[in-house]
Image 1: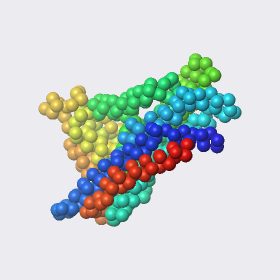
Image 2 (image 1 turned 45 degrees about the vertical axis):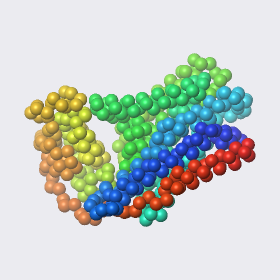
Image 3 (image 1 turned 90 degrees about the vertical axis):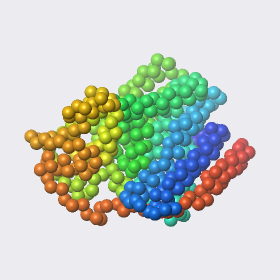
Image 4 (image 1 turned 90 degrees about the horizontal axis):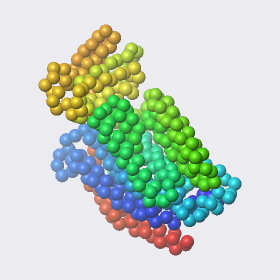
Length: 433
């Protein structure tokens, strides 16, 4: 406990943490005010209401853009806080004093990680203020989907903390650790870009990057493989940090142990990638087909092969993946999808005879369709499987929660009250020493 109290005092003395705390309020405020204003206009503010369904889903219309500010803070602000807390001990000599105590490096890393997560929880009061403001406006709140978004951003913060701790322990100077952390972050964005261009293995690997992970949580979807992969990466990063915090051990031994941790983490990630359980906690069931359709699809016990003749950068391919195939994978574990194209943009493939075709093969039966919508894909699947689609019940259709209310007083809360409160708290805490 003395170590936890020491790390907490280090956090309170960190200018980086106070800067992050002061900045996250206006960041959340910009996103929240813009999202609520757009939501209100779509609901009929200043005009006539003309929209239903996902257009009036608070998850998509309000919470996803609001919490995106937390993603920015975790990517560009939180690493400096983590590096300050880990590298500061080596710079000041406190690490040598800690090594004289009978505490394992795991305990020290866990103490630092726990304090950093607590600091992130305090910073998360900014989106909590947005939630309370939304409730005050009369907006609808569906707790499961809101908790899903929060869990996703806490996992993202944990990944950032683990990465910052590992780089700070590996390098001799905080600036080097900051550059290395930013390099890894940019590398994940490059991986997403390569996946969008080439697809295949790259597309599957990009599904485990922080950006893709947060996007799924912001749509109310929890995938067991993604959660376990994130936890494995967090444990691996903290494990490497613990290894390199042992100053009395030879560099060669620490390098070997780090490689071993990386190898075990990679094996765990590969094993977790075969897990298929997932849960759609969005109120609109935006990641799922209707319950009647899912029940029928689960009765298909033979493999279904889908051959898609679309290039990776063709917009129809992303629409097909987002609207139908991602939902189909959740209920049909024997689904196999093959993308066929000779170029990445598909511009000069348009004149080919079979470009744009989507073939569905179920046993000896094979049918072709060009539809990329959810209904079009379901009709093709039912047709090739010899099933008749049942009528969708009205109770299974999400009606939405329109709210034609502007973001009243939100600018005063996030641009005025929040920074003033943070500055006052920083003055009081630092004055007490």
